[in-house]
Image (cartoon, rainbow, N blue to C red):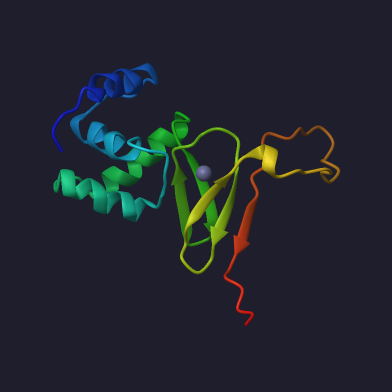
Length: 140
Ligand SMILES: [Zn+2]
């Protein structure tokens, strides 16, 4: 990938979050933030390696954790073996296709949560993330 005019912005954005913009972090951020997407660490590793074959699995994992700590991305735990990183950090829910693994964003306005269970005393809601798991109907 040739350097784009978006690059200086990306470097500024990383610096603004207190992240030292190393070459590999910039490559990872560039791939990750190109579009709103949901990716696993392995999917990201595969795409990043097309840009820079020297990027290690550990670097991708460490960078994802760093971005997570800085709230540049969100992590979605689909099940215990599958963590998906989400570049859309606004509050939203998901439809998860259990057959294809595809995730689709659902805006909070489209999912009414009319009632929440009683919270333990001394706690408040930090966030509510709903994953609606779907599969194709097999009727007819
Ligand atoms: Zn999402």
